[in-house]
Amino acid sequence: MERIDRIINNEKYIAHLLLTEEIEQSRQFCGHGRDHLISAARIAWILNLEMGLGLEKDVVYAAGLLHDIGRDVQYEKGVPHELASAEIAPSILSECGYNPEEIDRIVLAISLHRTKEIAAEESLSGILYRADKLSRACFWCKADKDCKWPEQKKNRGVDF
Image: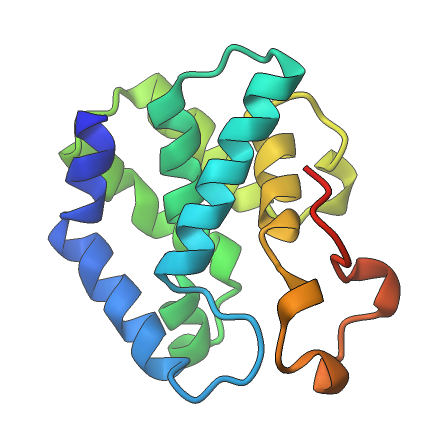
């Protein structure tokens, strides 16, 4: 996936990712670094395949890899990360060879990835929402006992 390789090697992408990882270095709970981003991308791809949506692989992966790229902006400026990520993503996607229609679909999914109402949608937005939640391995988490997530939100098994 040539365009995905371009994303993970993109200077802006790397700069935001490294800043988030630095800020979250002492974070006890779920992080938003490389592991989370690639897990969300892979789970979104699996959901796409299982549902037979026929979405393009590099579009699904791009949404997964970019959905939290604005976390550093949230930490530093208080901007909700889904909005910051949706603002950062278009220039990265454009530099990496995505066309305007693809960019619009990916950015829409990123901007909605925390909107519960789209959870059941059979769309890029819907699978990104679910993949983001499913990527959390609560059943293995060392901080589980201190986690403030309600029990009904925690992933207690591999559900995908």
